Length: 122
Image (tube, rainbow, N blue to C red):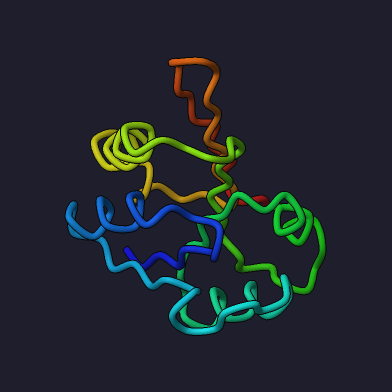
């Protein structure tokens, strides 16, 4: 499973996903300050799942320009180290990254973490 972490994704989440065996590229290292369209294009061209906090990138899913874009949206900014570790482990242990999806939303409500999976549209 190949992942692309947007500039706003915590280093702790990136490192934990790598520790769990995932190939994760950090956008800060490849294309800092890329536009949303450039970020989507980078992810699509490398067949990577994009991880982001950016709600604007979610809006690209509704268009026809990037039909193969897969996105994990972290809807809580400023995650703690423990929250990053919890998210990575939950994604891994429940097999979410092996499932077919277009959009996966990670919600954090206080101490409760939930994931909404949206399968590919036909």
